[in-house]
Every structure is written in structure tokens, then in C-alpha cells.
Length: 358
Image (cartoon, rainbow, N blue to C red; front, side):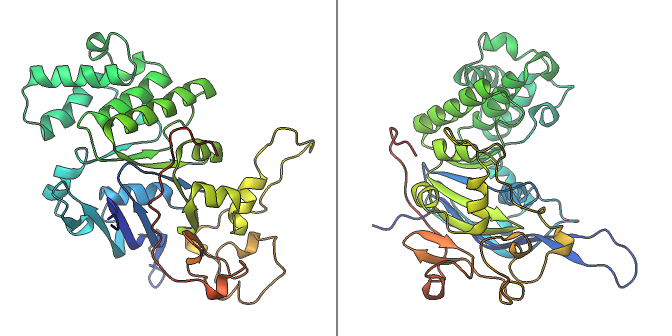
């Protein structure tokens, strides 16, 4: 039996204005370009790439949190499978309809918990807001659910913590509060946008272990946005590598880590420090991510690509994402087997066993 994805993003394109108000210069740039991505139940999809490549905008679009205007959904759809097994397009929902899903069936952990939490409201008030909105409970029951949520994420003396303000907590505890807030209504999909940013390594490991435990306990799916390939190797089932608003490589964590195909993915792996490596300097990818207002023609990575000689096709034609191996997609003209690749939507049902190590 073929499994249906819990959520499927199809040909999503999101644009923003350039900010140039001069007559004849008003134009829009695409922050996300024809993106396809699928997430199955109980699966973790890791989305990696440099800052500015469209990872957060993609996650925000799932909850329709991209402000309109200035943002605009140019094309595509986001198909969500509800509790009854029926499919609906999230982008076609009204604000009232999406509110029933936002924070309830789909929740998000935002970057920077100190700025995401409201400094003038207590921790309890902020957690209970979603509980009172989505669950048929009174305030006393909501307090207990909020306390249980804090207890689930490892915060001791949860009832008294509900009365505290964000500035009274450490960075690690604020991040745990963000997770408790996101999971209070037991969502089926969690969007985790850099959940361990600015945390020290010990707290980072605790937060990621906590997310894995809660995922196993509740059976939810996770979209994990991160810069850290080590985090992806330890936690993800499927990897989507983004560059310049596009997915340039997609596959199971085993396929991508065993044989990265795109030059950008290879550059990310080569820039990682490795035990036993005697090099004094780490390898780097030359240049910077291009400004969305000035994406180069053709393959957006070609000005930084060092793996092939100058090729007119790279600078003139944007390569589509093709399946060149079973359940392994790439967008690069020079990948072996690319000419015979299939243009299919990336879907990988794989879920790793608990004891698997990459």
C-alpha cells in the first residue's frame, strides 16, 4: 500500500517586492522558487542550507504566516492531510480556517526564543493562549495542561514557572518553553526553525534528545531547519538541501550523506571539520549566497561552483530537480546520470530505526 504524505508542498513560489519605488523599477523577487517537498507521518525531514536560501520562508508559508502584502504566493499548493484523512490546500484556506490548524495540528518553534516570547506576559499566559483557543477547557484545566507541557520538556517545579517572565529564564529553559508551547496541543506536524541556535553544545544535545523523545512518544512529524549537518545526521530521516530559494538535492539521510551529488552539498560536507584531519584550514565555498534581487541566470550556484570548468549551459539554463537514483534527486547538469533522470516529485517514505547511526 502506497502511503500518502502528511503534507506535500507542490511547486511553491513566494515573492517579495524589491523596495525600489521608482517608476518602471517596481518588480518582485522570488525567495522560494518552484519548491517540492513531502513529509510523512512520524518522519523527520531536515532542511539545510546557508542563511537567505528560503528555509524559514518555506516553513512560515505552511502556516500562512508570510504577510500579504508584501509577500505573495505566486504559485503552487500545500496539501495537508487532516485527521479524517481528507486532503486540503492550506494556501486556499481563509484566515479563520487556518487558525484552526495553526498551533493546533501544525505548530512551530521559532528562532531566538528571547525575541519570540512576549516579555510582558508570563510563561503560563503564553502557553495557555493556544490551549484555550483550540481545546474545550476552562482556565483551571488549561493551567494544568500548561504545567504538564513544561514537565514534559524537563522543566522542574512547572506550576511556579508558569508565573515567571521570559527574562527570568536561561536560554535553554526559554527554548524548552518554546517547545512546550508548540507541543501543548499535541500537533501532528512540528516545524522546528533552528531550535538550537545560540545554545551551547550540552543544551543543544538535550533539546534535540527531548524532541526525539517527544516525537517517539506522540508520533508527530518534524520539519527540522538547521545549518548543522551533524544535527541532520543524528536526527533526520530525509534531507532537503536548499540554495537560492530552490531545493538542489533531496533524498534519504543515508543516500545524501553516503554520496552527495550536488557541488553545493559537496561543499557543505567538505567544510566540516573531521577527526584525524591534519589540515590547518577548513575548506570553504567561495563567494556568497546571491541577493534574491540579483540571482544569476542559469544555475544559481554556477558562479561559486568549482567542480566543473566553465560551461555555457550552467550560466544559461536553470537545471530542474531530477531523480537520478532511486529516491535521490539533484539539480545539476553535470551529475552522472542526470541526462536520463526522471522529473518526479520528491517523496521518500524512509524512517530510520532508533538505533541507526549515520
